[in-house]
Length: 85
Image (cartoon, rainbow, N blue to C red; front, side, top):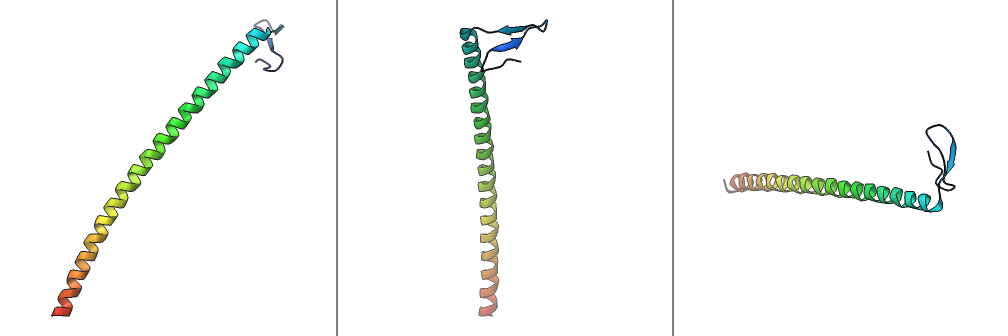
């Protein structure tokens, strides 16, 4: 475990060590790169999931429109026949 502000850490033997400013800055940059990549990956996954949901909803909407059109056509066809008869 590294203290990201002070640069203090404990080595394998348990002795407390101090990172140089350059080492600490390098580790901070690497840590930031990893966090940024994870954030980008999480966003990419979120967008992909949302796009899939949109496709599924649009497909469902098209199916429901087709069913509704069929019901309307059937209803009006039977209504016009009973009025004409």
